[in-house]
Length: 92
Image (cartoon, rainbow, N blue to C red; front, side):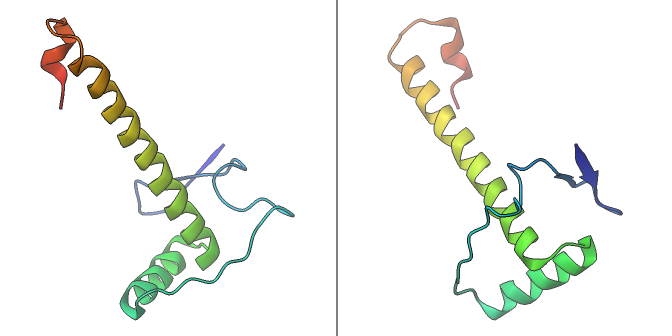
């Protein structure tokens, strides 16, 4: 199930893998620049999220994009080793 955010194309997943899981959260302390924190707080307020939820969503999104990038690099390595494959022209 997903929750659309008003006035935004962003859809916030409400499944337990994206965000806070009652009884399974870990507290952490981070150092962050003042300007980034102010922007994060404003964004969280505008979206109706807590700061913790916003940071959890941001980290989950970053990790997903990093996994996708890693997978793309691995696929490119595999295809680069096989000369003459039709898919070779698709390498990025």
